[in-house]
Amino acid sequence: MKSKYIPKQHGAWAMLIIPFLLGMFASRPGRLHILLFAGWLLVYLFTFPLLQWIRTRKTSLYGKPMLLYGGLLIPLAAALLVLDPVLLFWIPLFLPLFLVNGYFARRNRERAFLNDLAAVMQFSLILFVAYQMGGGKDWRFAGSLFLLNILYFTGTIFYVKTIIREKNNPLFYKLSVGYHIASLVICAVCFPAALLIPMTVLLLRAVWLPKTKITVKRSGMLEIAFSLLFTVCALVIL
Image 1 (tube, rainbow, N blue to C red):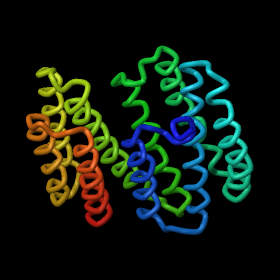
Image 2: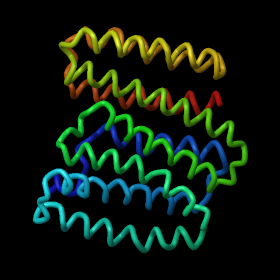
Image 3: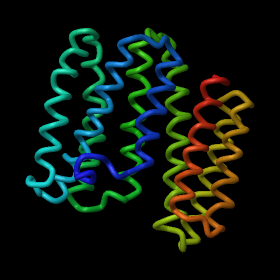
């Protein structure tokens, strides 16, 4: 029952929450953000069984979760659009990325790097939505937050794969370390110097932890700490 209704991708919860928080606190938090997050959560809960259905075509397993979450989502989405009609503008930006997820789900390749990258882009877009809802006007600033979010979560894709699926692949390890070095350089050029602190910690994580015998469970627990470090630093420094 739990596997049909609750997504199993633990890292996706951070991607669900962190961009939303960045966009909300970069503008002005308000009551509508509560409804927006509830809708955003329901979108995620609905798309999980939908993608599983696309992959397996097992309506008997995933039909009821889709009906439950879809039934909750439709009235809430309608209320949000009435309260803030500008939200309608953002919907077409999410659809192409979701189609990429559907493509890989249908081919049972949900762990493909491009699929993960499309998910990162899709989750990160909520930053702009939350920022706009809070009355944010500096879109260059919002774009910098979006870039920082992409840098962080793409690095997480590389790192997690070196711990699990690519842990015996030295080439992928080098790509991961190279990516984190490049992210550090980009941050040094584009962001306040204080952001180099969390980005350096993330680089050391990518270099050192894959060479240890760290378990998947312990790695996941550490990712919570790394996510908190990144979020707090981004909110305080920017």
